[in-house]
Image (cartoon, rainbow, N blue to C red; front, side, top):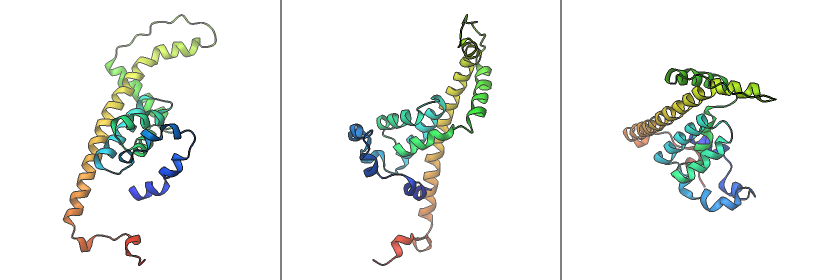
Length: 179
């Protein structure tokens, strides 16, 4: 999986040439934010899942900024936000409303709105608070769970590799070709 992701990700050099990213290069292109280390990747997944659930728009941008401050893997944080996407959006938000309704006894305030946005405001008054609470619960539980899953899977992989004798491990094709 790591190799597949690295092959499809644009290089740091290519991204550093971007006019949009160039002013932030000092913070964004620190080497530790791009390395594949267990803690960095686990933090990146947790941040991506959190922002994927909590912020419906600009979630990749928010996760990348948080990854800089939390010393997490930026590409993993950005990709992990895709836990919510156009295909998962309706069921996730419906489930969030149901979960939020379990914890919140919400009665609409009865906003007296008129005009073009009256229907939208009344609808948000009805479903907004339970949905936001449900999304917050999903974000917290999902990020903690994914952090633990990545940590556990990484440790299991290392443990399995240590038990496998070196001569039985699959070799990478690039390492076997004569130069």
